[in-house]
Image 1: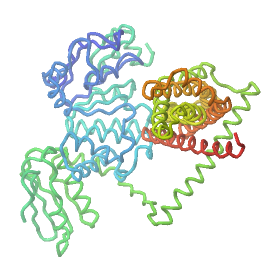
Image 2: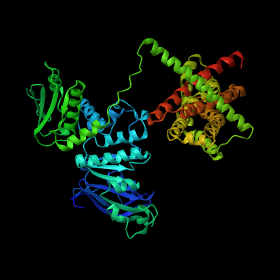
Image 3: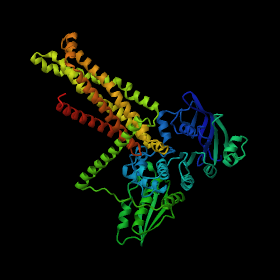
Image 4: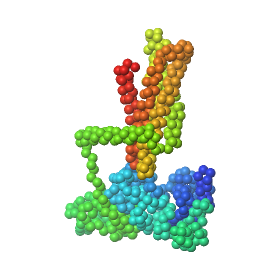
Length: 249
Length: 379
């Protein structure tokens, strides 16, 4: 990890109600890095992301953005920190009553303070960046799953965030759409220097995109490996090796 | 030619023979808003028209999407006028982003099919009503077949769902039904007393409340409350199931939504309504008695005796028969709009609203039909 740490997850313990999902999770993400959170189904990948983007409060530990603890910060600071990242949800989470351009314009107007006309001009660019030029006036119900995902990405990157979070970006996409989305993620990182945090269990994406990764174990309820995905294939943990080699040990 | 206000990213325009040079200056940031493209569009229209638009970025400090959005917009305008666009002098990151934006050619927006003429505005909804009526009839047919299957012991649904539906449309509604009908009985007694007192016939408040509540208001008010409560709940639940493809999943498993989802709900509501209305009648009578005894100084026994004399069994039975019909209407309306819901979150809200409005409307219409028929039958 050559780049200075932009995100630091320090001793994070997460849970719902009485149950603990993951404990003592700790790692750093450098600026411009593509960082992968991986693990088997139900291990708490998405839960970890929800803690990192301020949707769920941790039981213990904190998430630091350039040294500033998110959960220790006052409400106003948290709102300011939220402007630094965009999130692409698993099912895009587009507002169904708005057109694609209006969806992308929401953060530009509400968080960015742009006028409606300016916001729509930026929305047109963002939609074009994800290959949806000409679809500005369409409603989410009128487009395919892959297009919804790309529109969700256009909205996530509306405000030029420093950090983009992706929750299972390939879920429900055909291999070509999935590949195109992966390429787009790399283009964004290269063009804008955006830091990318990726929650996925798609092996092609993990190996092609990931600079670094952590593996969350559902049974041990903690992180059992971190490092470069290619190197993790030789991890001393048999479960990590099995995961990254599709069970071929 | 000078550029626009300096609060946005700044630019200047210069004409060199057939080339329009657009030089970008200083810092461009989304937080400072977007530079207006108006001056560029004017320059593109100037005579003789330029044949090339070239960007210069020597004076550019920092940039973000505001710059790329501006270049994307003006380059698009220039290209549409047949100009050659040169972005080679832009920062590499910006050129990459523009390359990405232009990689997929814009799909022309579908022409709007909206016809705004008077004929279309009247005819469209009329045709839609006709289609809805046909569809509703088909839904009624499917539900009738489901009931037939139930009578033959072949209906497939989970009995636990039926019990849940009984609970939701029965016990769950007791509180609100009690409150509304108690108040209706009380209001009826008050309003009636004001008139009857003028003739010294205050005691007939008992007749008014007894007949009014048992024959009309108990069933009607309970029907309306159930439409807002249970009908809305059915539409929202079934609508969400439709959005989540749960209804599709049932069909591919060979289960008919009319049997699995609609039947338990219609059955439970139609069967629980008479019980609810009997309870509502009792609370309505109590509301009337409360006002008569506390506010009108009538004796409790006197009031009860008068109520007993006025309340023929047929009035109560008429109310109970109506309640079964109202229950069926409320449940069918909720289930119909839920099952026929669109595929978005907004569609669920729309389905719920339609279910409640249609439910209340049909309950009141049915009540009017009952009144006319019963009058004709001298009941």
